[in-house]
Image (cartoon, rainbow, N blue to C red; front, side):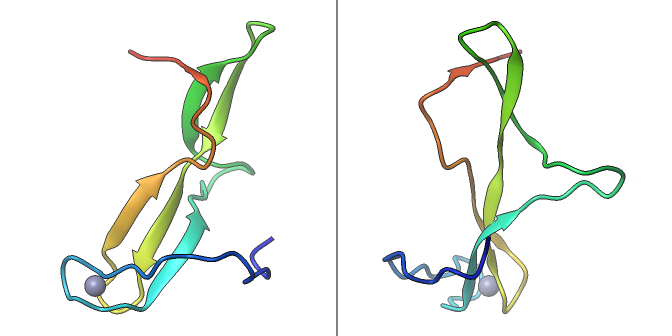
Length: 79
Ligand SMILES: [Zn+2]
């Protein structure tokens, strides 16, 4: 899943340390069970689902540079 390096990405710079060694699209894993922490949304069948959150992480200082989902066209569930 993380082996493809073909996609064109703009260079990210860490706002904390200025480093450019940013690890992209890291999944947020729960320690207790399989699956990812995500943002909830309603599907067309009124089934709640979630879009996984992914992060870009500075390999130098550990700052999470971005926290985002890859698909934004969802009916998001707000609280
Ligand atoms: Zn950094």
